[in-house]
Image (cartoon, rainbow, N blue to C red; front, side, top):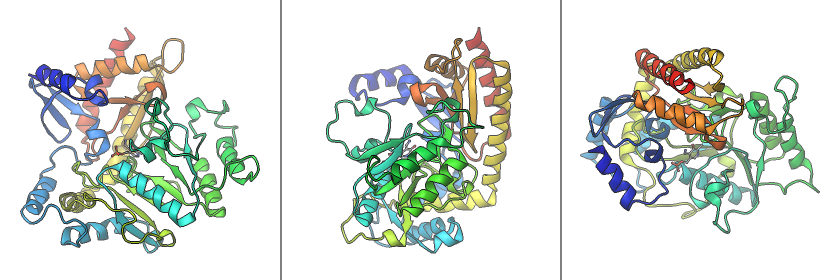
Amino acid sequence: KGQALLASQENNESSARTYPRKLPVAIAEASGSRITDMDGRVYIDFLSGAGVLALGHNHPELTAAVRNQLTRLTHGLDFPTPAREEFKRRQLGMLPADLRDDMKIHFCGPTGGDGVEAAIKLCKKATGRGGVIAFQGSYHGSTQGAMSLTSENHPKEGLHNLLPGVHFAPFSYCHRCPLSLAPDSCETRCAQLLVNTLRDTHGGVPKPAGIVMELVQGEGGVIPARAEFVRAIAAEAKALDIPLIIDEVQTGCGRTGTWFAFEQYGIEPDVIVASKGLSGLGLPVSVIMYRQKLDTWGPGAHIGTFRGNNLAFASGVVFLDVLERENLLANVQTMGARLVTELRAMQEASALIGDVRGLGLMIGIEMRGHGGFSSSEVALRLQRAVLRRGLILETGGREDCVVRMLPPLNLPRRTADAALAIVADGLRSVEE
Ligand code: PMP
């Protein structure tokens, strides 16, 4: 049965879709961290809809909140509604106190990419400047503006006239340092390079409208930025009055063990973009939160029919209730640490794992081939081996050499351990 659905998709959908090509699974239904395919096979889902299913599939309290909201109102356009008001209040309430008092919120279109577009437009308008600094390995979305800020060249091939004036600065990818330096003695030269570029008014780049950064590059290969790197850039952005846009689309909403990842870096963004995990249930919604001083938009500056989804608001409020009641940020930290520790133990014993890294429940395993070089082929083989054993993992990163884990934030220990056992077994089979 699954084959028929997969074949139909092959037949009449565009080739742009990604996941089912590598993970040939046709989904019948799902619950919590488990997916059942059309032929009755059960998988542990460590992809979670690319990180959106913060509480796994169909969490009963969230689905009840959505059902209740469905009977009242689904689409409220821009009108105030109780669900919208409560969601907004709770979202702003999740910000550190000094930031909260200085921030406004704007509901964007339904996707993370929409939020990124809004952030860039806002900063351009507020600064009167045009260029943007992004980072090597970045991913910000698939719309033209967001894709312009995404460093991978392949999807941009053949697309003329994307955003001009985007400068890609090196990212602190220490496992494969872009400057070929060693982490203990590098003195964070990658950050210094960007600082010099920004200060060099002759040979550098013109002062940009903003710097857009992921604190853990997700699609880029689960690379947590080094704290010194982020702080140096944040300090320079502040000194030069360049808005710092932190893209928390993937890192936000508890994924890294704090509500937002920036809280762990000791910095304060000027704009925060959030989306994936906001509803907790995978419903489409995105927001930007930004400093009052950037608030230069007039009526019509950034609108759209699907801004603000009342079902997502209702679900998102209950998601926060559950997050707090069940102390899920602590669970993210504990389970994340457990997974990383166990995966590092596997790394000790395996020539095929080059690096294990992550923050909270955003974890990456960089695979390498027998020559010691990072290897997409080995990553793909591991992905297939664990899929056969009932675990769904995504790959990503430069040359697709990183196997990624994005389990739900309420991941129980027994499921974490079951997934680890599958990875260990899958790894053995790839080694043979
Ligand atoms: N920013 C980041 C950091 C992301 O990881 C993603 C999605 N993977 C996006 C933006 C784009 O979000 P969407 O696919 O919902 O447009």
